Every structure is written in structure tokens, then in C-alpha cells.
Image 1 (spheres, rainbow, N blue to C red):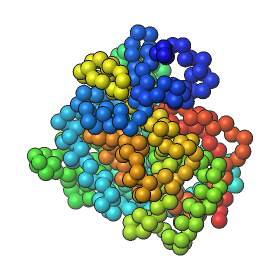
Image 2: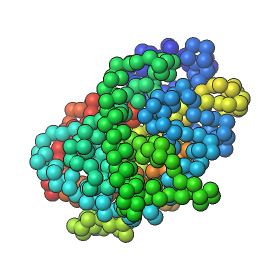
Image 3: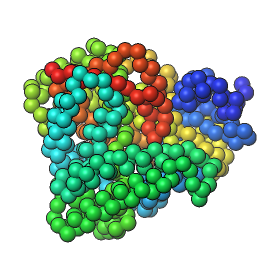
Image 4: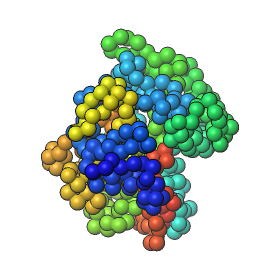
Length: 441
């Protein structure tokens, strides 16, 4: 079988979009799939064994390519997403304990209070058609700001300015990331807006760090915890620049991923009313009209499973690129040093050799019993191995609290007639947005 040429697939790209075209290539050719960009070979890894090989077993041989991640470094510096080697391991030891689920008890009430305030503000939107992505982004922004920075330092205007600036930064960074062969030294449209937006966020983060250093005793938010974090192996603490880079990483990485997955969830629930009713019944039974707490949020199992199924069908990061340091064998393919492998999360999540009826929305795939039956590398929305996102417990808790509190107060409907097609930008989101209508219970 002839190897597919990316350059000949443009008609399919224009008709189906990049993600669905890549999905079809995997279905047609198996995984891993070898494709060519001119004479340059590229490999799509969309099966659990290949994912395990690239992200865990031979992780040192498959590095993050500078060609792709240099754009992210403009914004995130040497944070956890972009750093490598010993620096990455040290930073992971410093950051991860404070984002682990057992540490999140310190910020649970802040999260609940933030969600409650936002949901009250949304009462003025009842009955109107509003963009789900915008609402989820607003809520996610408020949560990450309050839990990371605290609630008493930044003014309302500063928070609003940050929210607008982050949108600009995320869009610019995504654009830069996809211009793989475009020199970083040359400007692109939006350069001036990006620099202005970055300065807004830089000044706000610097202000909050300075206030926390003066207090020297506040560990009721994530920044306070990071200021006091000590590497148990070396007794080292973060330097000023490294602390700033990690704050920017948590802030920007945590802003869009959860909000995008929740946007897809409202669409999926609208298409599956029986699943919606089951989810609503669980919320009513577990919470009995009360706000969720750290103690009972783990009982909201269907909330977690619905979130996971949304992440499976529409992972916010549909793929990650890796570059081979040395030659290797991936499946039946010889991968040469310098070749690129795209770990295709969207593809492995919909791989019919792994999942029964892979395009069907079925949250019960994520019961503990069924999770034990499959490879841990079949579901990797937070990546895997050494590079697994350290904020996954935070994201899961955030999502469960949002789902339970939002459906406790509002019923969500999705007006018919919308064309819902996935498009990859900074994350995988509905190309034309998703309109929803809030109705009070």
C-alpha cells in the first residue's frame, strides 16, 4: 500500500478538517501510520502500545521538538510544559504535590464559592442563547485566578484585563506553534497585541508574587503553596524566574483545557438525554440541594465519568509531536533519528481495536471495573509517563464541581440546527462555537 502524502490530502482536509482526516488515515492504514510531507516521513501513533513506547518506555528517545515548542517558550519560559531533563524533574517534584487531590482540600471552598458566585451572575442570561465556550472560559478563568492568586489582591478591573489578555496570548501562541518552518525572529499578525497582552499578565503575576512574598505565611492558594515548596531531594526552592514560569504555565494551561472539555460535554448530553437524566439524578441524590464538599465530591462518580467520556471523544489536546533522537522501530516502521512522531490522542481514543463502538457516548466506559480491562495508554487526555500533566487532579475536581453545581441550578438545552465540527486551535473546540440556553430548575 502506497504511503499517504499529506500534500495530496488537502481536498480531504478542506472537507473534513485536519483531525477527522488524520482519524481516517489511521482507520484506513492502521496504527502507527506513516505519512509523508514531501520527502519527510511523519508517523501517527494512535494505539496504546505505540503511545506507551513513545511517552513512557522510550521517553528519552522521543523529545519535544524545538521546532514546535519554541513558540510556547515565548510565553511559558522554562515551565513544566516546555522544560526538559533535570530541570523538568526538579520542577515536577516541587509542583506536583500541591496539585495532587489530597492537597486540593485547601482550595475546595474557594472553588465552590467562585462557581456559586458565577452561577448567580448567570441568572441574567436565563432564556437567552449564549456561547457555551465563552461561559465555560469565564468560569475556568475565575477559578484558576482565585485558586492560584487568591481573592484579595487583584482588583476586578485587573481580573477582567487578565481574562482578555489570556485569550490573546493563547491564540497567538497557537498560531506560532503551527507555523513550524516560520522563523521565530520574524513577526506575524497580532505581534503587537500579544506583547501588550503578555505585559498585562506579567505585571499582574509579578504583583501577586510580590504581595505573597511580603506576607510569607499564606498557603491557602496555589501560589502560596509554591512559594513554600521545597524539593525533598535537594532542599532547593524555586528561583524568581522559575516561579514566574510555573505560575504562567499553570495559569495558561489550566485556563482552556477544562473549559473546552465541558463545552463538548453539554453538546454530548444534549444528544444523549438518557445520560443527561442519569447524571441529574446522581447530583440530586448525592448533594440533596447542598453545595458539594471535598468529602462528597468523590461520590459524584457519574460527573467524573461524563467528564472523562467528553475527554475521550474530544481531547482538548488532540495530539502532541515528538522527535526521535536515535533510530527506533515503531510497530512495523523504522523511525530514523530526526523523524517526527505525532502521538494522536484523538485517534487512540476512537480506535475501534481498543474501544467498542468508539464514536458512541457512553460514560459507563469509565466504571472502575471497565477501566481495569484496558490499557492505561488507551485513554490519555492528560498525556502519560514523565510528561503527564501534573494538574490532572485539579482539572478533574474543577470539572466535577462545575458539572454538579451548574446542573443543580440550571437545565441546559442546545438549540437544534447547529453544525458542530471539531477544529484544532490552542485546543480542540467546536469550529463555529456552541450555543446553549440556560433554564432555571
